[in-house]
Length: 179
Image (cartoon, rainbow, N blue to C red; front, side):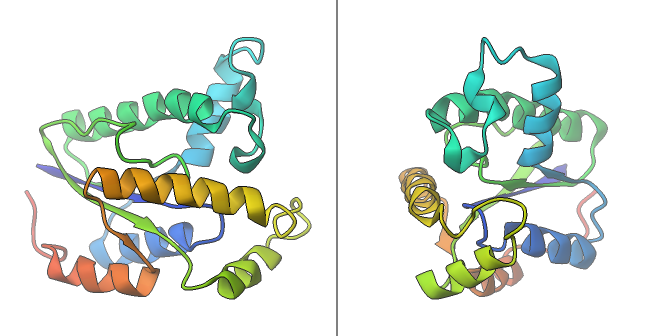
């Protein structure tokens, strides 16, 4: 059975860093970011039909519309992992419990990350300046984070800082052989 590590949360909460460290620790070579899935979908879907796909998540007028489309890509990656029996990490704002489906041949490990506090979150966003107005978009990013956290809690998925997630990961069956 393959394993799928599904890591959600808003921009700047540490998803990509956590995913890279987890991949090294667990010897996982397949990491897929939902921003990559969204970019591929932009190449095949006309903006007339899915205009919100063409905005950053925190700038989209209808994030749920964007989310439903990107979730189809998440589902495709999970199906491929099940069929080909490889472990995968999927991370991104679009990893929202209730919007993707985990195949029966995949053992899921799900978490939504959040920054320890607002000042730490702002500090992390400052590192992205030059690639957009992330700190100025903090109110929109916070709204998305609250939405993702609410969906996680609704579906029994823990909402943790990355440090807390490592504690949970160690308590999980990580590090054991999964054939």
